[in-house]
Amino acid sequence: MKQSEIIKMSDLYTNYLMVADGLTTATEFSSITNGEYSHDQLTTLLAEGEVFNPKTLWKSVKPFVRKFQNEEDGILTFDDTIVDKEYTDENGFVSKFYDHSKNKYVNGVNILTAYYSANGFSCPVGVSFMEKEKDKNGNYKQIKTKNEELREMVVRAVYNEIPFSYVLADSWYATKENMEFIKKKLNKNFIFSCQNNRLFANSELDLANGNFVNIKDVTIKNGESKKGFLKGIPFPILLIRFDYPSSKEHVGGIVYLVTSDLELSNKNTTTIYRKRWKVEEYHKSLKQNASLGKMPAKTKMTQQSSLCASLIAFVKFECLRISGKLNHFAMKQRIRIEKIKTGMAELKKMKKGISVPDLCFA
Image (tube, rainbow, N blue to C red):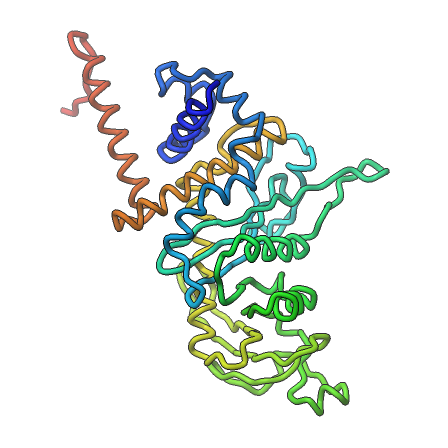
């Protein structure tokens, strides 16, 4: 197939992921293109893995990032999600991962995303799949940790000249290695949430004498901050307490934030960290609007390709949002309504001239 045809088919496929509900299949894709592209052509495209993969993701989103990028406003957020694959055989790409939202291990694909936000635009600029391989006993073991992948992805973002001021992540990523790497190696700042049992020294003297207390025992109120030292971190940090209220989606509680930017005000720290919520919206939109994980693919390469294609579908939604001011979910709902209208019109044609009983109530 010519390159121009591959590009056209790839574009149509990501459009298909945007409008589809339920499973997405090569057979259905062929049908909606009126046979212009066959089942086998799409299957081959996904199996080869040359169009949709982590490397081509950056090439696809680069023009949009360049349009909206800004170092002062640029935020690089890291978070992972699990795509359930309950009925797919474990192969290392699909494997057993602990799902914190369900408090149990599930069979699926664990995806770590580097998510960039600037000037009202946001999109994934890097993605990594947490793969496993069999050990000598036949058990699947993690090849790299999520924290190792995070550090590699930050380096890749710097290499790709993506301008950002802060790296954001939840407490899972608030490790000594990540903090030192971001601050010392890359000369960037971070804002991480932190477990309340981490050890904290209130001053250099306490640090020198080994006098540490649990973060939860540090005397600060909601919205207050304190300069000090986390145990094992060779530079001072700012500790901020943030009490957030309950909502429909979250139970309220206390969050402790740590940042390497000692000049950052308490209000700005929490304001910036709230931008991390964009990555949660991204995960939700991927699954509900961009058909993430809806392709019943069997091989590692077709699974990876179909997942990466959903990321491109998400970016298309985001570009439309910027242009048309509708959010992803409103656009998806509009698409559903138009599909129903088309279906009703088709049903009317089918019924024309045929005696079909209508329900009536006496």
